[in-house]
Image: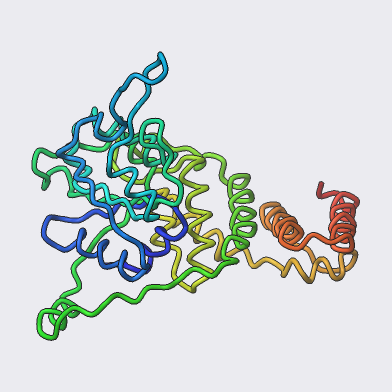
Length: 315
């Protein structure tokens, strides 16, 4: 089971949905991750809940009607918990609809859940008890990861006991890498605008598919994974699907971009790419470098570089 990717997604505050057949330890893995990250885990069995159990209960308040938050919501906020929405694929459509804002905006009805990480666990619909396919609006809110069985690890664990998980911890400055990953995403969208949104993919699968939201999630997770030297391919594919992710990763690998810091040191003479998408990606990387470390000298150097690009007919 890819616990490193799961741990990265939790710490980056991107909702992550763990798929796998019953009985392989999805819930236990998430509980072990909570212990490793020193965060409580609040388990909410979505299949046994009503919409009001998610969004809150209507109560009179000063002449109006408000929503009283459920107990699980108050406990989750108090402890900065990992909220596990278990058996999400067994939840009927009305409950899934109530979960939409919870997953995306961290709200239980009108009650905000700051600092709460959202994790789901699901069985494929054909293996679930009374399973339902996820609606596109629901599936597009998650990074989807597949849980697999590692027979060697299971063999060692059942013989000698299960060790506590060791997972990567994101450094405090990990978010600075988002400038670079968003710069690449900006260049990619210009190179392949047709993959920004591909809702037709939902006809072939109920899981990840490309949209502006899931591409931005992928950029955040890529930054987080790179900050702890964890491969970002499973996380990107978990957001936008395998076809779009593989195409993006191949394009990224073949960019062969110059170092943006070298371009800023010598903006008038440094070698620039000739291909349009490579040049745009290089300039986007320079922009990201300025955003990361904005000084007057670097700002002027960046404008010198842009002026040169325009003067050379590549505006």
